[in-house]
Length: 85
Image 1 (cartoon, rainbow, N blue to C red):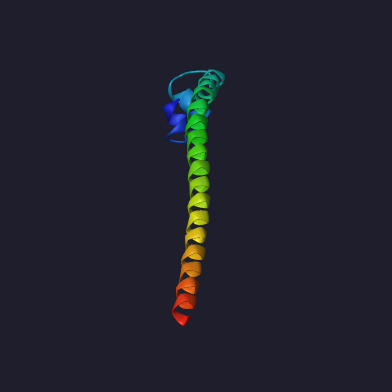
Image 2: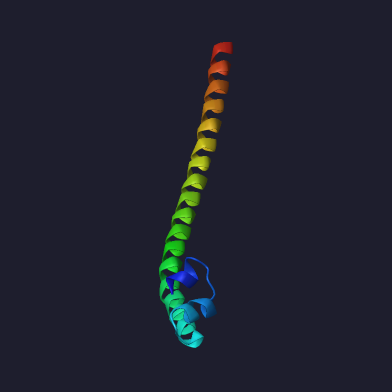
């Protein structure tokens, strides 16, 4: 089964080298892929959730940064106005 998945050998070649029926090896490979697809799916879902969380955090921080820029500009204008008086 590993030879088919990791070494990319054909099911027929693996079956013949171990004197097995190709259908049997094919069933084993299909079962392995089905069982391990859920592990990969969970990892991918976890990564997607983390990416979504990080993107939301970036949006929030960008908003805070824009607010601080505006507050600093307002403060500078106010100081300039106070000096002019």
